[in-house]
Image: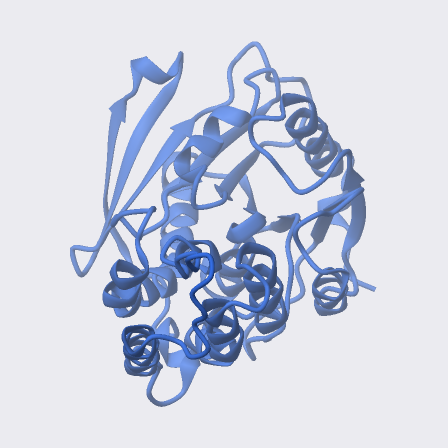
Length: 330
């Protein structure tokens, strides 16, 4: 979000021409941003935004995706309100199946940039099935400041549809593969929606990779990292952080739903986290005190880093295989 605002940042000053006051046009633009953000704020109890539960799965449409490789399918999960969730599926291969190995399926929500291509990151040598769910936001991923402002209400609405979308994915998996155990996996920006989906999805295990809680602190950090320190846009982004955090309050991982049960949880953090403040990582750990903790090499998850991804996938599979997901909470 902060990175998008940065694309419309201040123009450099001309040498020798002082500009002691911000241009009136800049102030008007910032006032417009504030108005748009305020208009997108939730009304009433935030939990009601996705508290109606997962849409009942009415139909699952499956099409082979030969271009992606052997065994891949594109899924369209259609709900009772004609809402559609899309994703990429691959069942575990016969050559990967092992005697007495538990039957696991992972339902993944990766970062917005990775989207449902996260299914391609799981090697077919592992005896797991995989469904990577696509983010509901189908608009542009690269936006100017004004484009982001005009789309803010729609972006928020799409983000709040993400937990039910994950729940639809879990329901579709159970329909397509009866008896399988389901691990819900959130990676990077996918962690908050994965946590918010817990009361809706009925998963058997939860895996969080490079995640964070305390979204307001995280947003402040992102704004400071992405925007030129001391600029008017940076100052405004910092000042508007509480508003944006309130917009995303239903996805705050620190919140706990009254109907939520303790679930076996694995948290995998980067050895040298370079994006998320340590306080936000600690807040996620505090949210799941019963979780098993692990680390992966390098900094924050980068899908193009195959060594890093393989290390994460191996850690997750060993935890599932060795019964970590079957241990009861202390």
